[in-house]
Image 1 (cartoon, rainbow, N blue to C red):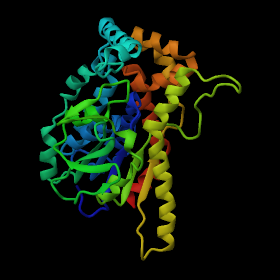
Image 2 (cartoon, helix red, strand yellow):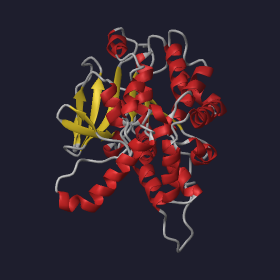
Image 3 (cartoon, rainbow, N blue to C red):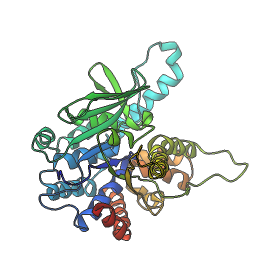
Image 4 (cartoon, rainbow, N blue to C red):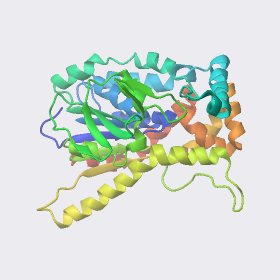
Length: 371
């Protein structure tokens, strides 16, 4: 951590398998020389959903940044769905039959156990690769300032920001949102990554938690509260509205509706908050005695990631692919599949897209870090 530079935060949004794009962005920053053997550009890491995995990994390797990027590259490029959720036909059929039973007989049976579409038990083993103990050690040694992971508390219907910062910052609270100090580990990342309905809620203490995007209306806020004056925010949705729409007069397919819900839950908030921050910066420039601006670098895909998903959808487990097709046509299901294709071929294409987007904006990126 460089005390002479302005506090710089990395904010990573959610998006399931689209988190591989964020890894590609980090590869691009490495190629521009911003990650070196004993130096990396971030003081604060704030991650939600898939972004919580990437932020935790980067923070755990702040003492060896290049090794950390190599590990990140290997995790995403060699990923298989079986490392994230159970892909065996019997496991998936059991979950599906459980849903059917609860929906059809729930009123007769009374209390029924909570259901989810996919069992993420294998994800725990994947997370076991991370050197979680290094998070505290790297903080004590001054390699970074804070790590935060956002999750949603289903028990209280509130957002929770799990914070590890060696007590440097006074916790803050808002309506339906609180800060909880924690030694961040795999349970917090699993909770933050638990996409509603698709992945199971995760117990931490006496409460159950799910995807942090559900209550995360201001993704840049925690980074600012933690002292960031510069923020690199990485989204995983392309500029503009390229999501396919049904023709006028045509009822939307279930895949259209689910894809829209995932977009709204996982992706919309960071775009809105970046625009809000940029508007506030204009006010700060007009009244510098009362406000200070927060310098924001907003990085996101220049292409439709669902189109990349269409090329590799065949790599999904057969039963998942079959169910996706049942939700809608190929184009509609590709939008949904782009969150769930946890396969190396697709993830490598996302990483390549992230790398290319950073290099295409080389001058802008280097100028931001030089300020």
